[in-house]
Amino acid sequence: MLKNICTIYDIELSVPELYSIENDYYIEPLGALLDTVVNQSGILFQKLQPYFNTAALTVTPYLTYPVNRRDNSNKNANLRKPTLLVTDSTTKECQTYVVTFTDSTNYTITTVEGEAQGTGSTGTDATTTDAFVKIESTKWSGTFAAGDKFIFAYETYEQTLRTLCAYMVGCKLLKGRYVSEAANSMVGIQMNYCNEWAKMLTEIINADTELEGNTEGYRPPDSRESWLGYNVDEKGLLQDPPTE
Image (cartoon, rainbow, N blue to C red; front, side, top):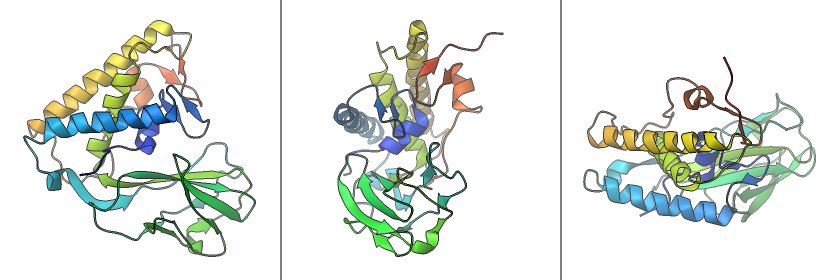
C-alpha cells in the first residue's frame, strides 16, 4: 500500500498557510511536513478501510497539470502535461516533481525532497531517472530563463481524497501556530480545516460524496480565501481579514 495519499503539491494548493514551493516557505521543516503527510495518510486509511478496499481508493496513475510559478520570467511560457510512462498504481508512491531552468533552454528535474531526477532541455525529450515521466520537447512553448520553475505531481488517488488528506495535515500542523500578525485568526483557520475534513470524511462514508475516480478536484463553493474569510499573500502568510 502506498505511504501517502496527498503530496506537497496538494498541500500547496489546498493549505497554502503550510507550504509554498515558490518561496521555499514552510511552517515546519520539510522532513516534518512529509512525515505528517505519511502519518495523516495512515490515519485516513484506517478510517476508510472498513468501508472501502484499496482498489476503491486508488485510480489509474495520472499526472497533474504543471504549475507555472508566479515569479517565472515569462508568464505566457508553459509546459503542457508530460507523458506518464506507467499505469500500475502499486508501483510508485505519489510524488511531486520540480523542473528548474538553469538557463534559457536547459533544466534539471528533482523531487520536492531534492532527489535528482535527471536533466533535460527544451530541444530534446527527457525522461525522469525513475522512468515514470517523459517530458517531450514538443510540450514546451515560450521563452525561459534561469530560475524558472514548473511543478507537477504523479498521483494515484482521486482529488477528493487528496484534498481531504491535505486538510487533515493542515488541521494537525496549524494547531497552535501563528504565521501572521492576526494571531487569533489562525485558530479559526485551523478549525476550518478540521471541520472541513471531518465533514468530507462523513460524506464519503455515508456515500453522499462518491469516489468515482475524480481527478479534477474538490473545492469549497467559493475560492479558498473567501471560504476561510482570510487572505493569503504570495508566501502563504495569513493577512488580516477584510473589513466591511
